[in-house]
Length: 71
Image (cartoon, rainbow, N blue to C red; front, side, top):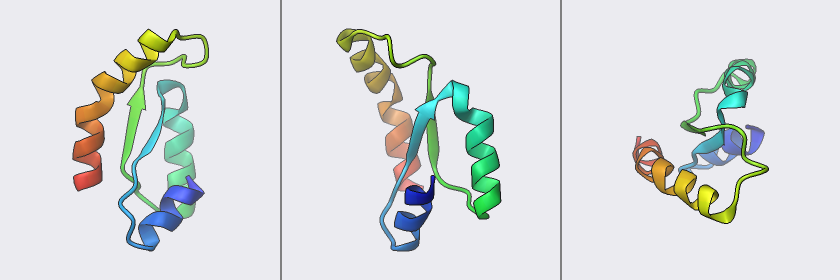
């Protein structure tokens, strides 16, 4: 989250990506930093997914990522 906020402050369009397990934590961190970063959440868990499943998650998140970085 710190990197996202710092990059945005430098004018670098940035999107924070995490799994749904971290929605509340991401909001708490953003609030603590006084920031409202663009964010996209993908289904949890991530670690035990096959390459094909990860590709599907990425494909499914693509449009949301593009919209978020264009905001």
